Length: 436
Image (cartoon, rainbow, N blue to C red; front, side, top):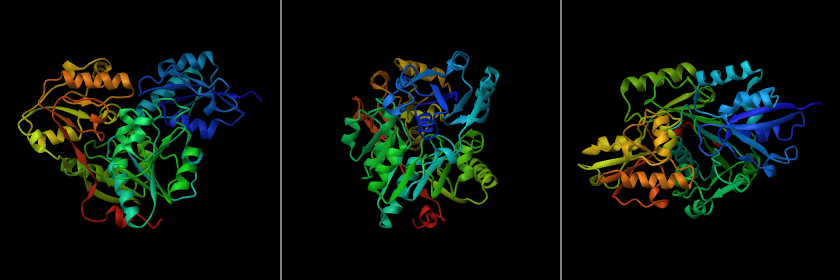
């Protein structure tokens, strides 16, 4: 039998997982390449042979997505598998059209092929878009489970941007573990808030091995989703967040709409900072899409330990990177804090951007008054530090989940924003989370 030749379109996460669980050991398939989008510095690398398996002694090359048609033509590709997240439905179908026009099939893998079954109950926290507040909801679920006497761990959606073989299975129990693993800012944004509350986090590349390690340590697994992707583990209970700051996105982004359709509970977060008509629109859309799901209304109250560092000051706002970039948001918690606590001026960071951050502002023109905390590697961390240093301001507002002072020097006063999920009325997550 001549193996079917496949390309997987990805962004260093879902693509590797789909390969591992659906293609790696299949003698009837040869994955000839991955492609890379969304994440810088992924293209030009290889998925290593020690992860790729016996059929791939040289590993698998990773090419820019722009090379798609050339790969189909030169590699005789018969099937292209789409495997990344937080993109509009129209975007997905444009890629499908390119593949079909080049002569290849276009495939989306479903949960039956990609969700691993666990011996432990799994609570999955997912969303319809990046930046809906999954981390805060995950922390709330962990808190509820602990109060019930359970032993939860968090398993995080992958962010393997370094040495893939070394990142096969990662376990983080303390902030020092992040330093030892040379975690990027994007990784720290997701891991630090859990570690600060004493929660062990698993992540990596090979989620079958990660699942086994997590099952050995906990009696409940809490899946902390990335972007708006589907969970990698089959959930006993799925929570999906929707965002009233982005009404209309509930059913127009992939695969976020699938999360909404699968949800047992839909959480409308950020109601304390959203417009009433947008809250109403999002609630109505969620009910139309999934009338069987329980709807929970929630606020995401912003806390600032020292509001005096903001009031009357010129501020530079640094926000979570992915929320602003492929999440499409022009602002985040930092800008909301600047408005609430009376900043005199929000300094535009664009004239002071250094290196790749200039490209980020060009590619994502909706970002204007805030600085995305881009840090996919040490070069970007240095560029972010230099941009902050060059921007004339009195205070730096950190709207990111990570304290950037752990990875760089900030030579101005810092106001760090924190927020948690707070349900409004009933039902609450405590009310609806079943015995596990």
